[in-house]
Image 1 (cartoon, rainbow, N blue to C red):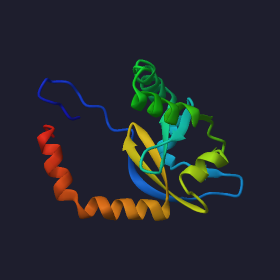
Image 2: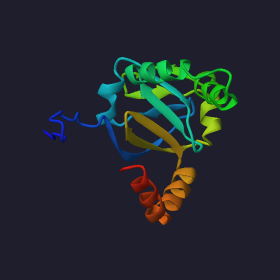
Image 3: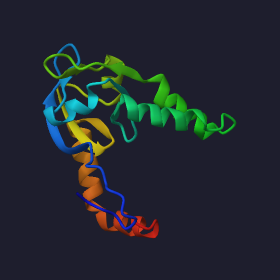
Length: 156
């Protein structure tokens, strides 16, 4: 158990790690076994940022949706982000083999073909094309000192 300065217990992160899985001809992708319990009550996949897809467990999607619905429709950036997230959203169900069927329009958006990288990011899962993930990771690792410096200015 981890305890922060206020005495609150931290919950164990839901999604951690990086996995490579195949996409079958029907657009089905196997979800890593350790991620499946968190998605058992439903999940939502949508267009993500940086060219990937986001998968949220139903409860996390509801939290995000509540925040997004309160953004001001008078601001163009807010409207654009809400459109990006909601217009591409699709409810997922895990089949008995632990697979989800991702719609073709989302696979096309993320340039996912035969292989995909599934990355766990605490409260969501990201789905990447292998090529895009390798490029993104190399770029991020190459400027990790700059990223760390910026995060330090944010108090992290």
